[in-house]
Each structure stands twice: as C-alpha cells, then as structure tokens.
Image (cartoon, rainbow over all chains, first blue to last red; front, side, top):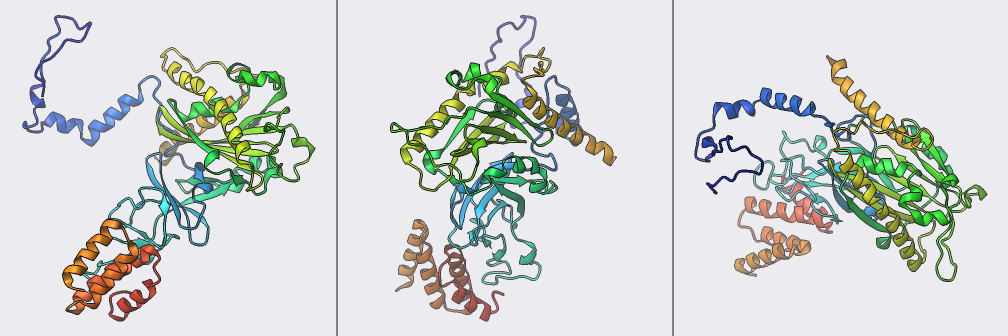
Length: 409
Length: 72
C-alpha cells in the first residue's frame, strides 16, 4: 500500500492532505461506516443521487407492461439449443425445447440459485445444474433431484418437483424476434403491437435468417435510447449517409408515428441490391406493386428496430450493457432459405457500412448530452416527429412508474 | 475391471466430459457396489448423466431406482 500522497493540480496549498487513519484494513468497522451502509444511509444516498442534474433512472429494467426484444429465434435453430442472455442484469436462458417451441427461462436453478447454462450449447437431454445436478427438461420441468433425501435417495416429501420447475419468462416471437415481458403484466403482444402487425401484414410470411454471414454486432458508447432516437427519423440521412443522396432524397421519405407503440420512417425509392451480373434476391411473394420501391423502418419500443424491403428484412436488437453502453445486434433475413452467399455478403457489408455511419452520431449525442446546460433540445415539428413520439413514450412510462408507488400509498 | 481401473476410467470420463462413458462407468460402479446404499449412490449419478446426455439407458436406470424406492 502506498503511503505517499500527491497533491492534485489546483489543490490549494492550505488544504491539508492526510491519510484516512481509519482506512487500514485491520481497524474495526466504525459506527459512522455502519450508518452509511444502513438502510437509512443508503436511502439518503439514493435521494441525493436522484437529485443530481441529468440523473434519470434506467427505465427499462423495472417498467411494467413492457415487451422487450431479447434475441432472435434463429439464435436457437434446433431443438435443445440454448443461449444464455444477460438482459438488464437478469440472467435469462433462450431455449428451443424438444417440441421446437422457443421459450425463455430465468437461467437460475431453483435449488441454490446457481446459473444453469453459462455458454450457448445444445442440450442433448436435460439441463443439469453444475452445482448439485438438479435436472430440468427443456420445457422447464424439474425431473431429477439427486440425493435430495440423502445419499442415493432422490425424492423427499418436502421437495415437490411439480412446484420447482424453471421460472418461465413470458415471451412471444414475431418476425423471428423473441420479445420478453419480465414483469409478466404486459398486454398480449398481438394486442399491444396490433398497429405494427397490421401495417406489415403483407410481410406476414416465412422469413429466413441468412446465417452466420448475415449477423453482426456493433458495440456503441451510448445509451440504448439514443440509438432508437437516431433510427426513428430520416432527417439525418443526407448528412450522415451521403451515399443515399444520389437516389434517395429527403423528400422521398415519410414519417411513421403510432403513439405508444412505435415510430419510424419509410422511403418511396428503395433500390434492390444487385451483384455484378444484375442478379437480385427473390422477393417476398405476393407483396403487390406498392412495395416495389418502398421500404419501411420501425422502432418497436423499447429496443427493437425492424426494417422491411421487397427482398429482405432486418432486425436490430438494442441490448443495454450499461447506462452509456449498448450492443446493437443485427440480423438479416430473406424470402427463401437458399439465397446467394456472395450477394448476402454484399448486402451485409452494405448495411454494416450504413449502421457504422450512425455510430459517431449516437456516441456524439451521448457525450453532448452531458452538457449541464443542455435543455433537452428543440424538435423540428416537421422532421422530428418519430423521435418525439419515442420521447413521449419514454416520458409516459417514467411518469407511470413514478406515480405507481404514490398510488399504492 | 478392478476398482482402481474403474476409478481411473471415471476420472478420465469426467475430465473428457464424456457423458456416455460416465453413464457406463457409474452403472458398472453400481453393479459392483458392496451394498444397496452404495448401489443407489452410483446408480443415481449414472441416471443423472444419462438424463443430461439424453442417453437411451435413462429409462432403465430410472426404473431401477424407482424399484429400489429411490426415485418416483
């Protein structure tokens, strides 16, 4: 342990520097330290921190009635495939059961709370807890409790397997995205997202993940909400994606706003990607001429960004990694399972370029919004509607959350 | 197979994460057990690894445990 203290630049000479005499590890725990760590002390600290300028609680974790994107069903393509996902600090397990049903469980053994699956893998038979080997079927049933009644005695009247299955998290798959509702009280997905489902009913048909060449991730230094903000609107396109200007002008885009559900933008001049010989991807069948040159991009609140085109689609999951860190997980889909690999690679590269062009924007907004005199900015009534729509949704959620404890009092 | 051979085979199977071998060797350990308690102990472990691996021996091991009053 160092015993030297250096004076930080700018520290007045009159300011006495000394070691905290209580800081030696061998010294007893003091009453003051106890007070700081008491319930009252921690509550006071929370209140103080909550009063800091710019402080906002992370709204995603505890908000009720929320269906958030956790992953894609293509992450678990075969029965028994399991993928652990840490989602907002919650250990979850995305799994395809023996019958092919995609399920989400809390990745926690009902015995001692051990993590069950710590890396993506195929469950050949049962999920065995690595600690005391309690075993679960892929549908969550607790099927073995070895030695629970003593050595070689695998049952005990006090351990009712029927009540100790894995905790299943409410989930729903739409457009291959696995949505979860941690609080369990969200309205049915088909009801909550009726607007988006109806809007894209033409695309309600099988879609095929392009495979390993059609998925990539971008780690960005920003809050997840800034990625939503940027995705929603077309206002930034001429400046951030100048490559679009030759064929897709600002006036070719339109805003999409469904308050409380989603927002985004569309274009009327979508141009299919081609290879050197002019070959294109096959279209989704039966779309009709309206989609020949149209494409739409929706942000499904909170964290799922979707895009549809006549010949491919994509899903982006914004996975919060911390208040100022987000992983964008991108998946590309096609109308048939056997598309050309070279063309897929070209399409992946194109989208990677586009999404990478947005990184400096979302990271720049994150840095810029630390400015203590930033007052929230000004929305363009003409151009920022979709982002405003998202802000309105976040604000309503926060207000509802803050009001809930008061209503209960 | 001597007890020492069996111990070595079990350790090797654990080190390799070889589920099928674990089922085989723990079943052997159960068969060679000197008493019912030891048999139940090894049989339980064989059954657990059979469940984990989706091994075809799992139903028979379960039936054996159930017949001994060690499983439901």
